[in-house]
Length: 221
Ligand code: SAM
View 1: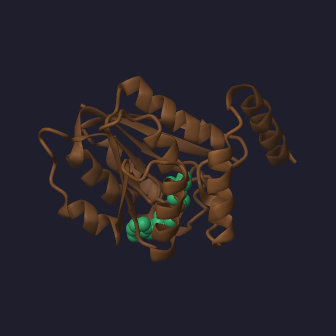
View 2: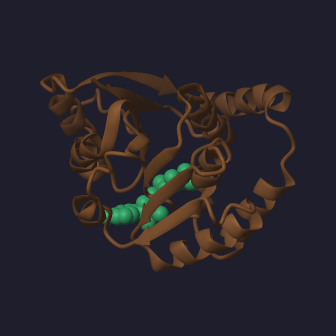
């Protein structure tokens, strides 16, 4: 019942703050039509939050780990200047095909680059670009690997750059009886960051259409 109230509350505030968006509606429809589970994408309010953060920090280059149908990538790409880019890493080839369709629909094909394959390998193969490091990394793939992704994200990020990790509250990591691997992944990341002198971080719990969860927000020092 409380979930329903969170969803209603999210829709209520969105109705004032998020404009009708036929392009994103078409993207979501296409994603669902292709059998890709759009339900696990970020919510509209979260997508806009990512968008606003990129505007706030003047981001130009963004790395995303876990693309699904490109919903969050589109929100983020829309916040970038003409010469900005979202590089998004996705394991699933069907998803990658759907992203290509969706970014085309959104007129963003030149700003979104999809790398298909296991994200960790793709990250290991990337070198920090001294002239164009990433300003922002959004980690939203297999939750078990969050720490591995976080370590590579730091390496590829500019000083002062931002990392957001989704799902750091999902399934209540606070409750030790929850031992599902994705929840263990969130705990491992929190333990790792506790002793990490390279970042400052916090978790903001999120509630809304996606239930109870949390965004971990970290700044590279
Ligand atoms: N960020 C997307 C959005 O909000 O629109 C949602 C991403 S969805 C929660 C997670 C994605 O990560 C799925 O598309 C899944 O195929 C992908 N994924 C899972 N394991 C992966 C891996 N090892 N490497 C790359 N992508 C992976």
